[in-house]
Amino acid sequence: MTIASEIKLTTIVSAILIMEIRTIGRETFLPCVFLSASRRDMKNSNDTVLQFFTQRYIKDFCLFVFFSFLVASCGNYEKKTFTVVGDLNEASETIKYGTKKSIKPQVKPIQLGVERFSLYIDSLSGKRIAVVANQTSVIKKSHLVDTLLVMKIPVVKVFSPEHGFRGVADAGERVSSSVDEKTGIPIVSLYGNNKKPLNEQLADIDIVLFDIQDVGVRFYTFISTLHYVMEACAENNKQLIVLDRPNPNAHYIDGPILEPRFKSFVGMHPVPIVYGMTIGEYAKMINGEGWLASGIQCRLLVVPCKNYTHKIAYSLPIAPSPNLKSDVAIALYPSLCFFEATTVSVGRGTDRPFEYFGHPRFPKLDYAFTPEPKIGAKNPMHQNKLCHGFDLSKSQVKRTYELNLNYLIQARDLLGDSAVFIDQNLFFNRLAGTASLKEQIYKGWSAQEIRETWKPGISDFMATRKKYLLYP
Image (cartoon, rainbow, N blue to C red; front, side, top):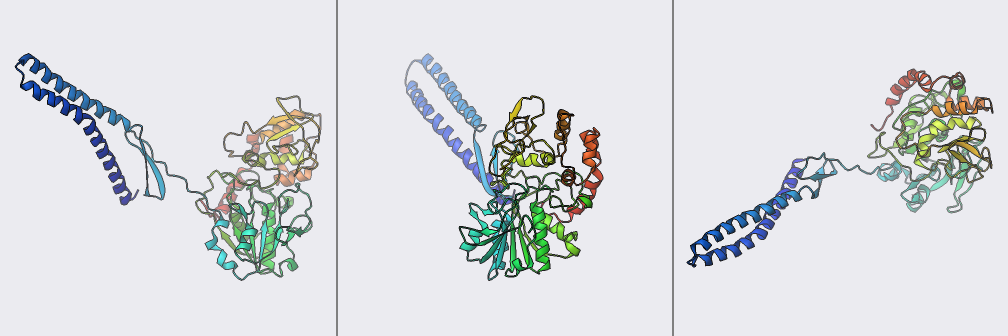
């Protein structure tokens, strides 16, 4: 709190006290004046006994009225709340007089990288722009592409990641290049055979803008798209501007480190499954650690968020992909995605994917669901079959601070010998980044025993991560 704020606060309190004193004066003075007049009239009376009792009554009554209003007025301070707005570390403070309350600063709204025009818009003037974007690339309620066009910034083409520019394609579904119906701008798909922009696709481009909402999980493929875009820009001497966004899973780090032999599009770098960084920080790490081909460097500019920290709980305004529809699903995704390489359903084909898991061969439980074809899940696992299982949305009331391996262990135990559990061994190992997890699960290791084997790798990663952080 500054001196100016303290003076302002003192002035406000003084004014309030003066108002209360005036109120007490009005409410006690008039009755006393009336009774004093009666006392004056009694002086002219010859009845001395009557004068004595009248004077005593008037004094007692005036004291009673005065102290009654004084106590009542003091009591009111318990109920009155005054909000003092000023230069209080640029925050509002609420103070309750008459009680000892801690002062709680108001949390400032997060300003996304894309919203900080002053840090990047001038560099786009007169340049030919390509945008790497999907349905999450919005400024308030306007898409980034539409906003740039309104600002007379020439957007030459759009590159789209997995799930497509509109974010409705299934996981793993091939997305063809097309033309945006609204703007007529060509859309080049970066999923399928063309994961990396070709030289000819960058020939008519000066600057590439990258603005995609990530969820901070190694096997979520947007960071793999980022890698290939950085590599293509480096090879073609194009500048890349990453407009940073918060990571809803940035508050913790967990999981095994990816081993080089399991490198794939669902895991390209030696990081844990949950790495605790925004996509802008991650881009700096890709560059700084020399992970691009031949160690080449991308001309990178990261436009950071403002008023953001890794510990802030951030709710995504737009679903980042068709099957992550809620904050609960995003929180559970790092733990449940292992089931994608098993015969256990994670609720694809329901209204709440990644909030359930179940199997037709599980014994009858308290919850069941039936997967059906939906947008983003055209052919879901166990389609039209009743799956006995678990609704995790009701148990997910606190923030997650670690991967929950008990889901895998419980599913293995429930299936027993009734059905194959992990039916895609290589894919499971690629998701885990190691062959050890599958072996540990089948050998009956506990979650705590498995987690102990991750600690050395996580410790080494923490030291690497620290070099590239933009936020506390």
